[in-house]
Image (cartoon, rainbow, N blue to C red; front, side):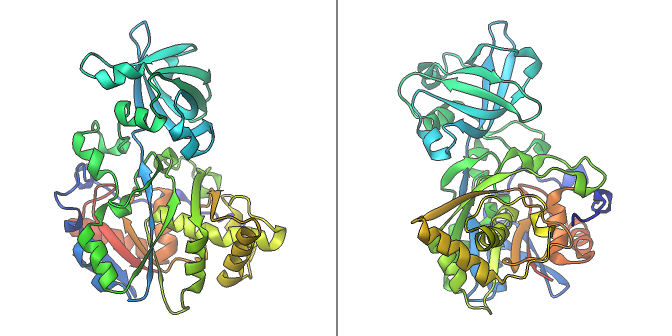
Length: 406
C-alpha cells in the first residue's frame, strides 16, 4: 500500500550561503557527521575508516558523468541547448558511445520553443578546431513535454560519440549551484573511481574519496565492491505533489556482476553492507525485489516505484539473491542489467544496506525521505539541525555523513 506521506513534513530552512558552490581544495578535508546508535558526532572524512566496522563490504557506484550538455545554433541565430539523458538508438550505452556516424538520444531541450523542426549545427568558432572538424548536427525527431524529446546527432570524421561529447560537451553541474560549468568541475564533479560512462549527475557521496581514504579502508579490512547505476536528471526533479504517493519517481538503469552478487551472498550475517550514496542504496535494495521476481516468475524484469510496498515480502535476502544468481547461471550471464524506479520513504523495510555514506540533501526531496526512512522517526531532523548549527556545507559539493541504520 502506498504510504500517505506529506512532503511538507520533510522540509527545513536551507540558507543559500550553506549550499557549497565549489568543492574544497582537498576532497577528504570535508566534515563528516556520524549518526550511530542515536548519537551524533563529527570528524573529518579522512578518518572514515576508523568509524566503520572491520570486515564490512563497502559498495561504490562506479558510473561516470558524461559532458552531456551541448549548445547548438539555428540559422536565425537562436541558441538551442540539448541535454542528453539516455540513449534511444542504439539503446545500449556502450553501443551508443561507440557509434561513429550517428545516434539518437532522449533529451531535454533548452529554448525549445525556438526549435520546431529541422537540423541545427553545433555552436563553435575558429578557436575550437576539434569541434569544427566534427561538423556536429542535431535533428529533431520527436518533440515531447519535459524529458520526452528525441534528437538524432550526426557528425563527420569517424570519431566515436564518446569522443564527440568529450570535445563538444559540458559537464552538467546541478542547477542549484547557479553558475556555469568551470574547468575545475571536469575533475571534481567526478569520483576518483568513476569508470562506466552514462550519468548526467555525479553520485556525489563518492566525491570525498581520495587514494589515501581508499588505502585506509583496505588496511582496516573493509572489502570494496562496485555496482553501476547511471544517475539521470530526474534526481533533480522536485516533488511538486502534496502527497508523495502522487509523485512519479524517475527510472534509472543499473548493472551488477555475477561476481558481486556471489560476494554479497557470501558475506557473513554479522558483517555490514555500507552503501556509498543514495544511488548505490537504490541499486542494492532493488536487487532484493529482482530476486523475488525470479522466485515468483522465473526471471527479473524491473523494479517499479511502489513494488516494495505492495505486499509483505516473506523471503529472506539469501533466498532472493540465490534466485537471482540461479537465473544468471541458467542464462549464462556474467552481469545483469535492469531498471529501477524504487522510491524509499518512511515505512520502507531495508533488506541490504546497514550503513550509508551520503551528503546533505535538499528540503522536500525524495532523497531526504530516504534518509528519514534509513535513520528512523524524526532522527533526520536532529541530524540536519546538527549540520546546520555546526557549519556543515550542503548538497553536491558539500560535506558528508555516515549513518548507521536504526
